[in-house]
Length: 218
Image (cartoon, rainbow, N blue to C red):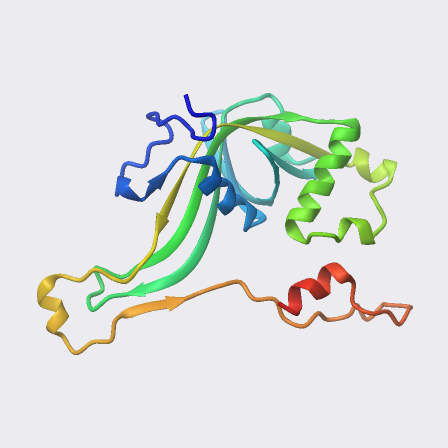
């Protein structure tokens, strides 16, 4: 078995348009590393739940955090199955017919289970999440104190299996529709950072932090 590829199973196999499916870790992890918001789903006593939350990745493990009173985190500490989804939207695909409109996207679907972590591993996981959101910011600010750490639960999500699904390219219309005088193509999309807005409560005249300036100057 190739350790760099997730084995296809009934759980992770892409069934609709299977040619868009990808199972290698490089592709899946590239998608995960370009985002920091996921949708995390689980089931509790027959009721499904799904919550958007921040995450960070190191190798084959994802980390999430939140209040120690979080229903989601409390439920997942018992290791029950979970599903985590990340989607990157790259463009609107505009066809000549409404039916063939689509989107160019990259999505990753993760299946796994979680465990609560403590001590040095917990602190390191928080740093990983912080760096996933804004690299370098953790080193610029005050770290969490003991009280804040007690108020925070951190879970490590071990990835059991996963797959990615990707669409690229122009629209695909019915042959007859290519003769219609209608503009068609792709409207690309991307996340853009704008000039930072200083906190009005700032008591010092300071330059924008390096972690922030590295984003809005791109």
